[in-house]
Length: 432
Image (cartoon, rainbow, N blue to C red):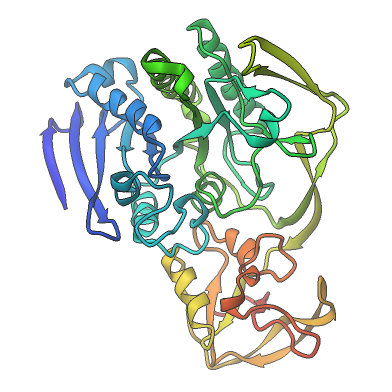
């Protein structure tokens, strides 16, 4: 349902819409700001993890600051803004990371087992944002770092989609420029910001995972939107009330900076993407020739320490591509797989014809081999890859994909020594 607060025929729109309900029937409310005829649509989402309240506070501050009619339009005349302040109201109510049925929402964008994520994907699929800003908090105190007297120093981490199959209308250098400008602007306002970095117990450093279970990667793959991750540092007892205000202000400033940067790239962001003919389905981290310098706070002395991390893997090398088929044929017996694909808005057709197909047979479990032949398709749901965002079907359904649905035992898609992979590839133009 929708509640229109102000509507002046495109000059200004401030409204709110309940896009769905949580597992415990709490509303998921999206608020809109900006001119309805502005070309660039930006969706800000906070609170996927219920215990990350400071990100929610930063986004709430944004809504309050710009709630006065005309104020957002004067600052961001080219942006329509949609804001979901609390993506996990049940988790927020009990201050837990997961939702009411113990699902981590930011690990559920592949399966969509939660009502909350199904509502979010439904909204994104219909409103079609060009940019999605995913707001989180991160803990600065990690056990393996504390053993070396290191606490993460940065106020804000920022990152972008890292799965190599993501296809966007904006080029990689322009995305890197957005990240650099956000870091620079925050520095000018007295806040520290760096690209999201994971320091492993081994001492290796890398950026966000390329897996497609999170919002940052999956929403970018499915809807061709530039997804930007903003993680504000969670305050500790040592921060006190002043430190907590500082952290909220830093993340609020980061959101404003992202809005400024994407507005400057609006012409590139609103262009349509062109699907690639070959999709990368496997990759590995590559060691950089340059070490990474990170700033940590020493919890004993409170001094800032510059640490050089030699084993730094900022980039991914694609190790396997697969040609894009016309469609995938999923047996109707795989009801849960079909349900997951349907949750994502993918449509399927039916056929009683016998058609040429490609199918996988065991050679080695990790390296199945493609064969060609003819099969009757009467018992299959046929999912065309040419539908919007259909290239993500390759990552989900290929048995050689590092990110495929076969990883989930209950779907029973694994390829065995005696049984071939149950999903077929269709390269013929039939029905499409």
